[in-house]
Length: 192
Image (spheres, helix red, strand yellow):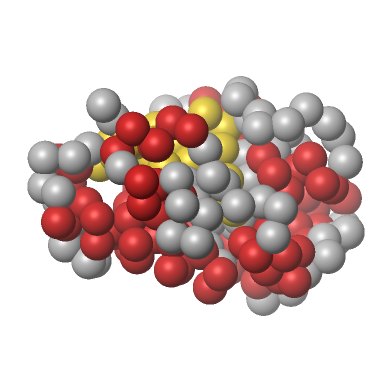
């Protein structure tokens, strides 16, 4: 199992270093995700507590409430309003948006549609596991997943800026599962 993951990460690194196109890198990540989902490489989910972990993050201590969007209005500071949540968390090796975060993305999309001059930066992040190149690609896929959901609701391309930090800007430092969970995220940051 461990050897499969190492080979898989090496393959991703070879694609990244060989100058493959963004589409090829995306296809490579998608294929790896499909393989993991079909059980071909179950190392991607070993040691994970399951989807209930993210459910707990969405509903309790990991609200994603930050001060960086509070300049927009009181709804961004109200913990009962989904607009106050500005962090979308992801499962290990995944860019799939979990159901618990759909309401948050929908609220931000509705806000952006109603405020067409407002711009939002989607910052993709990953935990420290995996190579730098892999984590940059994964952070990019996470930002694109959130952007895709927003665009489907009418948000324009011009309102969104996507950036991937990979593992370079952790929310918390640590090499335990709790830290990893907090670092697998996409942060929504409105521009002043």
